[in-house]
Length: 471
Image 1 (tube, rainbow, N blue to C red):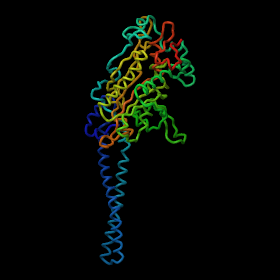
Image 2 (cartoon, rainbow, N blue to C red; image 1 turned 90 degrees about the horizontal axis):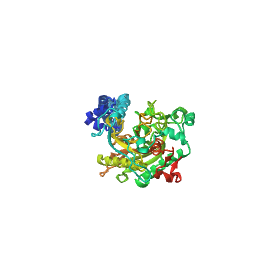
Image 3 (cartoon, rainbow, N blue to C red; image 1 turned 90 degrees about the vertical axis):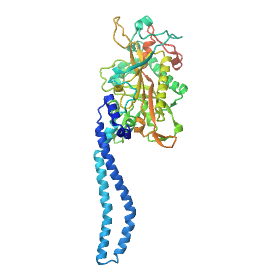
Image 4 (cartoon, rainbow, N blue to C red; image 1 turned 135 degrees about the vertical axis):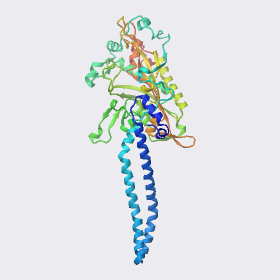
């Protein structure tokens, strides 16, 4: 969530952030409620302080006056009785005032909290303005050069020009090579489900294991196994609720009398970031560099009719995720952003997958990100159907690298002590390392052969018993 102090000092920045992200949040209403709350809370704190003072002073005074009252007569007795009554009435009046202030705050605090949690993280100043993914800006692209195991590939030319034959789509390849059984997956679980079979399952596991080992052995990340079923506060804390609530699978444990409801996570980021919620880390512990391999679940609400065929947009998948928690320093955060992207690029290059990097515009950032770069892999089976009857090929998103500033850590109450011992909210970043089976699309389509077989990229072969080809 945002820093309310920054909101008070520079409300225009947050109004602009809402506008640039295309999000309708009543910032002025939040400011009015916040000012009202602060005013009442000041009165409440003063009343409680007065209660504490009187609690210490009134008792002894009353004891003394009541002692005097025993021997007093006439006007002196009446005066003492009035003084005692006055002293006894003060705590009663203060208690009533405290209750009134508490009730007044309680009457609007839910609206105040709801508005506060909806205000998005403003985009970084150098993020290009735009309304949707159509306005994202290409940073660079990479095409595979000729190597020992594959020929060069130029995405500006057709697959047939590059390889000498028309490509099959991944749906055709997995059918012909018996790598995926969609029909039985749908039979068991409905649309957008599948069964990985034989070498399809082995390739899927090889990709995940290679990516996890790469992050641990070559990039120095700590592997973690985290829950994929979490409480609501973990989804709120990581910024996936309330805006993304419709995308999550909901387990209504409360209806079973089993306590809090639970949710299936759509990314390992939720579990990785939730580990240190409500903790204060030491400066020496930073940066935290965590990676995990977890099953992810997404309802894909609102995506009806979009990429419904094959493995691109599915409800259950596995993902190796990377998360960094670092000092509250913009330059350090940007450096980690570049490093996390480099990990992805090295993996894709080793797998011989063409890709491009896109700078996401303000309208495509989402609630929690101040900056985001998407990585799109080349998929020969996507795109329009050309005059030759074959797809033209197109890029499809496979990775997303985000800088979140302190937005996520503030919601999670994740802090560290700086050089002066002061608790400071940390900065957080996250990035997909690999997501499968989506990444199987470019692997299968890019490395298919004229005879219908698929060459297995060398880094994956040790995880597949040394096999070099499927089919």
